[in-house]
Image 1 (spheres, helix red, strand yellow):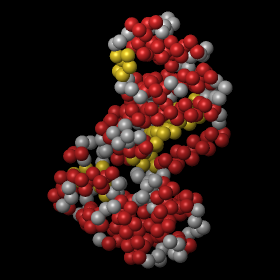
Image 2 (spheres, one colour; image 1 turned 60 degrees about the vertical axis):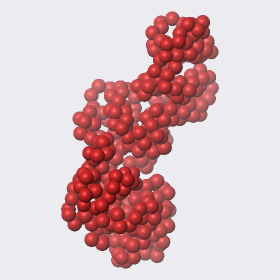
Image 3 (cartoon, one colour; image 1 turned 90 degrees about the vertical axis):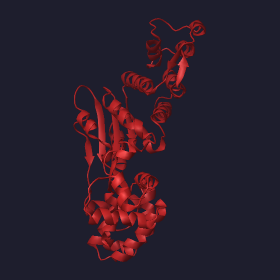
Image 4 (cartoon, helix red, strand yellow; image 1 turned 90 degrees about the horizontal axis):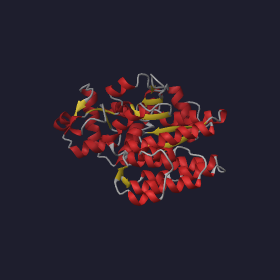
Length: 372
């Protein structure tokens, strides 16, 4: 959890495919069986294009949860139902804000934070008036801090009045398309007080200034071979107790099953490394079969990934700049952007400008060591 004050943000980091998402979801599911003092609001960063899109999605999920959990609380449902529409525009006139607030205030007895938030933004202490709406044409900007503050106010009021705390889980925050905004957004989240928030990001996304703000992130490390085999069995339902049982299995089906289960086409490669190095499964056959699958799935030219692997492994390179990769491997910016997006190249810090990024080869592609 975040250190200092009353901050309650849990930052979960780890390499791509190590199990951050499935691990946190499993913990939340188990907690729901044992406790009734919270309810989860779960949103996936890889399904959102911008921070604005993410915040609107949070509001939409909150509306769904409130309707399911508190179907008889008309005041709460009525107020949260306005959230997506309030958060969508980039600005609103003071008059329209007055009008919306007055209409809500006239229909509800209990304020769950929306009416109070509107009054604060309008600088008003008394009742809202529809008549006032005709006199105000000045615009109020609806930016991301506005959206976050409104959602936070609603979350706090629900917790206080319903004795049930919304728990916000933002999965794969680093996969939002709007990369240049994510870092700033994460730092803002880390400083929110009282609200329980869980965020998962890849390790390379957590830069030095984030670590200074968040002293104790939860890091997911590599799994043992035995743990990997157990998870493999559970995820795709194969009947095996050790690697020998996989000899007669179709590796392509295993790869496709893991890709479907995890959403990560490279997730199964850690198991492949185990199979190649610790069993008598034919290394050349296994390597060639799965390498073909990776290249086909990513629509990549095999020789590009092969050249990358050979260069990184033989030269014993750590993180290297885009310029060096282009100079030594004949890759262009499009190649590098594609390889980063598909997880083949891992940036040291995804928030750096493209021309300043430094990369390593994904550790999940370690099976390519067999050919160099």
